[in-house]
Image 1: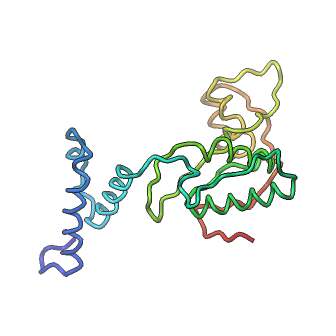
Image 2: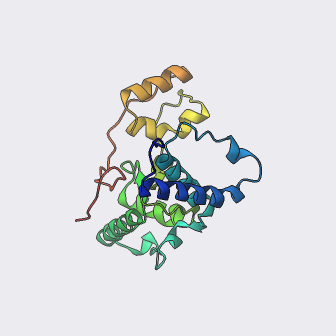
Image 3: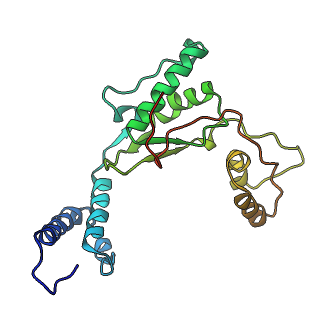
Length: 210
């Protein structure tokens, strides 16, 4: 910001906002952590956005994901739904989650019923900080759920690899797979195309449900 001339009203407003944000965020730091953050090279506008995100995080309530919404999301048990009903309910809840800035990543290895049950049993009841910022999306990694790819009985993988085997098989690119093979001195099972491809909403673009 240029101070060689008289500040513009926008610059003054930016500085006043900065002072207010610093005052608001300081009580959340009981030690000298806040003072250790180096804002010297950061333009005031950028610093303000950073402070806004910090303040939003500190003030965010911790709520079950289903209670982020009004009314709360409550799903019927999957066993009570036939396939067409379940698919309709699944896409309705995917749309609602996206409207609440919740994105489900790596779902294409899960059937509709498996994904529905994952949302109902694990995602909706889980308590998460709800950070209310327009550009903030909460990503749920679905690659940790579901049946792992079949491997030979003689194959052994370190725990980190075993836990990531779904992602490594269905979603990792060749470079990522090679990095894991080199790091852990292993041969991964062949890459596979996930069996249930979906046009899921993403934080990277505007999405409209059909």
